[in-house]
Amino acid sequence: MKRWMIWLAVCLTALLAGCSASGAETVLAEDPVMEPRARAEEPLAGEPAEGEAIRYMVDIVNWSKNTLSEEGVLLVSSNLQIPELTAWREDGTAVLEPATPQEERAAAVVETNNQRRERWAVAVELQNITAAAEARWRAQQESENKGIWILEYSLDLDSSVYQTDRMVSVAGTYRSFTGGAHEGTMLLSWNYDLTTGTFFDASMLAEDGPAFLADVKDELYRQANAPHDTWSLLGGNLNGYIPAMDYWTGYENTLANWSSYAVSFNEEGMTVGFSPYELSTYAAGPQIFEISYDWLRPRLSQQGLITLGLAEPEQ
Image (cartoon, rainbow, N blue to C red; front, side):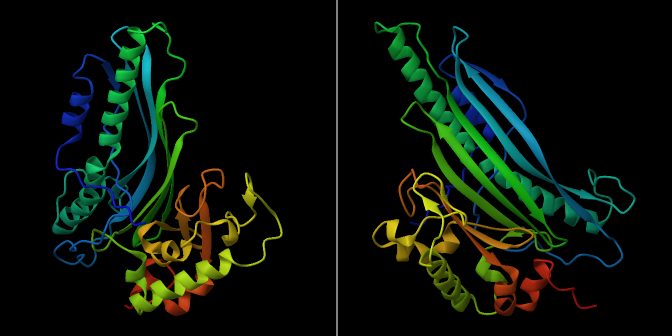
């Protein structure tokens, strides 16, 4: 199923204030900012100026937050790895106060990438999970289990980044625990074009977008139905997914919509990931498919090859 996160119009500070309105103490580091699988947007106006080289870098920033009850009991812990984009001049100084049109454009590229995360659902998830934890704590104070809080709720995000001169690709695993039988797990991804300042869908890199979508679906189907020499329900197989015979009925429709799921790039090629329950049971774990650049190359446009660092731009 296609699952897009809702873009939020309210700022993170207001949301976090709402989280603590009931009296719980909020211990906050820096504001978290992130959004998965964003749609392509209108590019930033203007083209990069000649002779003014700007270099972009992505660092993983560790963000943490604890929410306490009025009694000082830890209700929610959150630990997130946040990718943060910065722009740098040739002399090694960061573009913090743009001094040229090119630097202004670079600052806009950075702002578009980083501000997007301020609208991500982490803020809403944090608000909701905190409200749920507080409600459970209050209920326990009114029951025979008063004062007992066995295990706090939690939110965690692990991220990895792949970058070329023209784009940044982020893959993340988002986990939440709210006292159930097991934690919830969701694979996230987003791909950002540094030259246009937009998030993009993988099919936009292809020579023929519709054909590319169909070809990747067929390749995922082929991999899922290939012989699996090593497999177990709990451990998966060496390829990162279980046989298609153990997928839900109608899994072909999910594979056909692959670009709506967690699609990212790395040194080896393109990764298409499906969270638990999207193709099979929770016990089966995430279903992660790898498609090599050798397979991708003949299907990509020249601009797509350049974006992925597989070809040099024309001079």
